[in-house]
Image (cartoon, rainbow, N blue to C red; front, side):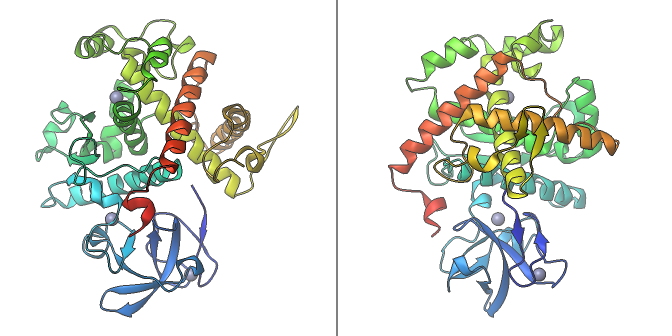
Length: 374
Ligand SMILES: [Zn+2]
Ligand SMILES: [Zn+2]
Ligand SMILES: [Zn+2]
């Protein structure tokens, strides 16, 4: 994630913020230029961005920002849409008759915006299902009205034909942590769900009908294996004893699709966390020297996408090790609780190649609404 400063007072501001804590300026994220900016009202719901990069363009708040307070993204004042790019993918939102659901929705939206940010930065702007019902992306945030049903799995978090469904109970820390322990997982977060499910979506888009399918099967296995049976087996028998030598997580061993989605999510985690580290100029000393030549490592086509997978991993491992130790000093769980076997790294490298190839192809075709910023 990029780091942002209030254009009015210089205060460090976070991606999720709606107001500068120092000067009280209203803030909004401008997806057309990829910046969080302080805003000045110019009347009739229109705003001028203080970020010089925005020039004299006028913006309006996403309706989920102005009316619902669950978003902080802006769109151009002359855009006929009322929802921002990130909210344009929403197909179903939680039932807001329950105040608790609104709090869950807020958490889901915050994680979703981080996912969308990352996808845009990687050169993978998803098309909304509204614009392309067949190949587009949409989200459904669903929960059971009755709290007793929350853990019943009646709403399954998952992906089908471009629709990512998230059980809103995943935004409840107690429910999610209980689930994590039950499933014996080292990592379960709302953002992790979004990144994982987006992996399924991009598999359909980038691999299913492409010449990448053969190398995919060679590395991950044959995805034509019965999916439901594979999951049933995973839940009844657990992962194979030696899963750590082949997979990034136990769940990845359930089926090649899950292995791909887990590897994809890992890649997104690492690329985004490295961007944050680089923006804070973090460096980690190792016996071999200074790891974290993040600037050199990322001197690729843009500032986000790693130009070299090898350099990315050489920066990542010492950084993860250092931050895990910092977290332990605070009595917190490890920031990065995964152990990466060479086979798991190889799968992530495949993800890297798929993303790099797709981003290069996208650069040669006209940008969708996201990049055009209309
Ligand atoms: Zn400020
Ligand atoms: Zn929005
Ligand atoms: Zn999955």
